[in-house]
Image 1 (tube, rainbow, N blue to C red):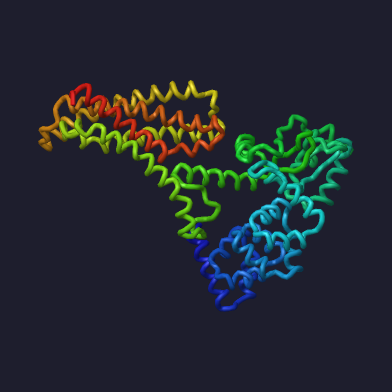
Image 2 (cartoon, rainbow, N blue to C red):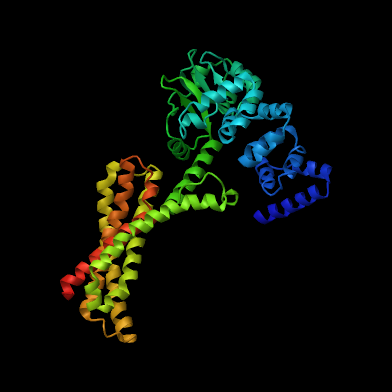
Length: 459
């Protein structure tokens, strides 16, 4: 599929270069807006307005929504007032609000000036809600019905109002004061036994909804759990103010997953795609974490310095330090990733900490014993007998294997507890991922290693 799109993209770009605008327009008119927007990402700045003006009006608006903010800003700067007004008329309110959030102040001023009063009021309403809340990603364009309407009246209302609504499949039943009291689907209306039945007779009253201040990540989880196409949003008094649609929930899922991945890799989350981020922006996102890890690694150096005499007395000990630190870091990462994922999906809560800790300890003991047994045989058979390292004695082998087993247990405990602790203090658990945990576990594994060496080898 990707190869096919690449061939089509090259062909379209060639048509643009050869000025075959009529053929290009006909092909673009048959394409999906997301695919058209992807092609804009390959154009030079001066080509973007030219290709955009080839698009049919409705496709142009849908493509505009899918484009990168930089390309949107470039187009707006080149639009006449009438062109900008036409684009805004085709946009849904939530898309217009997203556009306003992305643009610089001078562009926002121009957008709001060209928007009609109703859209301007809706945009301002959405922008008033906290960032990353259900209110900030909802749209105010939905079909509202009254409980005393007949099925026939409801269908007629959908026909009249549905053209400008983001979704018409699910319709919401509200009272005169806009309180949400039920919902019906178009399927319910079409399959109703009698056109004179009232909406109240067929509507579903056992509703699932969210508040305007509900976190967007929680909203996305509800879509995943209940397979919704849309989710109603109510204010503090139970009045319906909008809906979150499936496409917006998908965007949130992608955004949150990307943010978690970047945090777990030790980077500040970026709002731009990789190819649109400058080297300096990448530097700013990465250097704080690298600095933190470098400074925190000082503890590892201090521990090694404290046990210099032990290393000098038993040179063989130094050969196994990388293995211990690597195994400990990997063990801690396994636990942390599992717990972070569970927290992100809502499968785990802070109250489950006892269950999680007990399960990780049992898992860690089994892993630690298995690794220690294999490590004992490997050191004795390979390092001592096959490679002829006579510095490795039975007691050295024992120190390494005991330290390895304990390190795995300690690492898994740290790996599961730190994300839970972050959750308890309202931090993103992903912050406590691989780089951070590895640094802590490295120091602890060395401490365990040298304590065993001191006890068994008396160094």
